[in-house]
Amino acid sequence: MRVLLTNDDGITATGLNVLRRALLELPDVELEVIAPDSNRSATGRAVTLYDPIWVEEVEFGDGTTGFATDGTPVDCVRFAALGLIEEPPELIVSGINHGANLGDDITYSGTVAAALEGIILGLPAVAVSLAGSSRDFVPLARFVARIVEELDDVPMPRGTLLNVNGPGGEVKGARACRLGKRVYNDRMELTEEEKEGGRRRYRLYGEKPSYEHEPGTDFAAIAEGLIAVTPIHFDLTDQAGVEELAGFDLERLLRPATEAVE
Image (tube, rainbow, N blue to C red; front, side, top):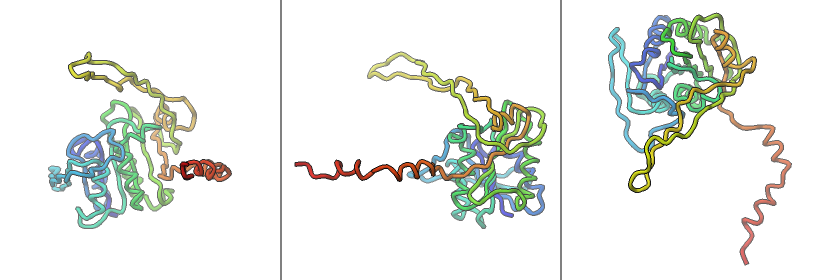
């Protein structure tokens, strides 16, 4: 199996390299690495539209190499699909991110965005993150390697990725769960008074967020010391909303906009 490993923390990040070594131990895996050349956290599904993207081949010090780019995590996946490597990947693995990607946070995450790009391309994908301040990526890397090794038996419907988050301490098990609800505690703080021309500088983020305490969520699993595994798909359509809108006279709203003005 041809596996592309990427991340949003950068190609030198510890999490990526611990997972890289774990995947290299799998006998049936052909591993390729394409990752940003520096941290691209919280870039979401950003892509580089107008500027050329630099690519550099780098050595990992164990006889293997990868590619570092000054693009985004999504760019890295596109590079793999468009021919930067000899054969297109059959699986996308993104991570291990240093910091959780739980609940609503996944919409900001470059780690999850790279995996989403995989399923848009019709490829299975796994996004991997480690909660808390722990730097012990090894147990989570071994768990993900087992997912890759047994991918044919893991229930992953087409168009679905697995968002995997490990607890920051002792791993007590693993659980399939749904996304939870993040509670953000951001505030607007003026850091510099108004300068000539009316410019002011603010800080919007930085306060530690919390979450809604509900059973069955990824937040609950992490709080219990479990690896949280959440299947995610890209279909954002509210089917019930489509059916409800179908019974509403949308044409009535269109008519005043299209009638000639007398």
